[in-house]
Length: 107
Length: 187
Image (tube, rainbow over all chains, first blue to last red; front, side, top):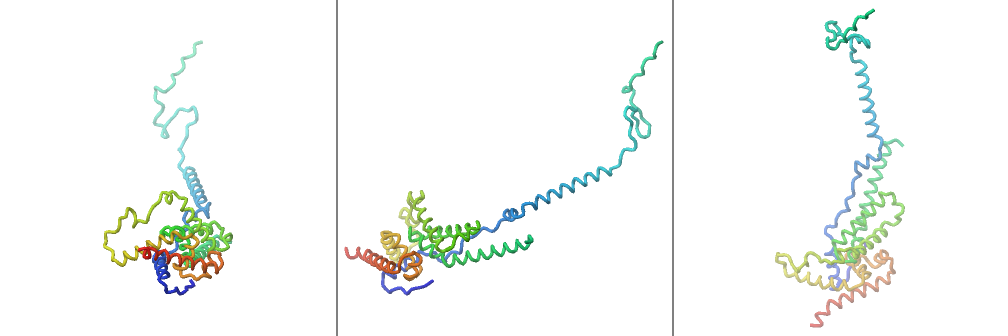
């Protein structure tokens, strides 16, 4: 500031008192500026989250494939059309499901 | 440039810009306030205008338009004037309002010392006289008496010749003195 001594006249004193009383006291600080938000920061690295999500998805997929591939297989499989049977051979198809035997051929 | 280095450089730039912004506010905030105050003689409104003008400057800087503003001080003063003018077009202003202390003539319940009452009355008269002056004269008086600026500095801010400032200041003071003494002369 470049202060200038005020003339010591009543009108000058009055004007000075009036305008100085109108000024905010204490002088307020500068307006608050918004901090750079996380969203803005995230925008600066747009692929970071996407890359992480993709990597996690691929890892889950590979893990699932490995798990199912190494799971124990059934000991024996029945051939298509063969009579179903338990692995120890103790059970056979219930009678009611069995196809009746064809009648003997008459000559 | 590596990502980390770019980040650090950006943070330094941001910090320097904030420091520059606060320095500008300290240096020119009162001038911006004075010109806004001179328009409507309303301290709170002038403060709002000041804050808004500086926030707009910051937004320009954030948008990367700092190079466009060659003279931030002149830019701020112009924006403050425009904001104060815009206020006259707002519904709030058209519908009219008064400072809270004058609403419905209701005054504080607290007893006021006689000196304060006399001073307020005198300030009320002065305010009426100042409102009759032109906004240009009020600009000069506000810068002169609120900020103690000399004529050279006022001329620089307002873009007017120093001799014109001298003349207008002298005339405005004389008019204020005459108008304030009129009632006592009549009585």
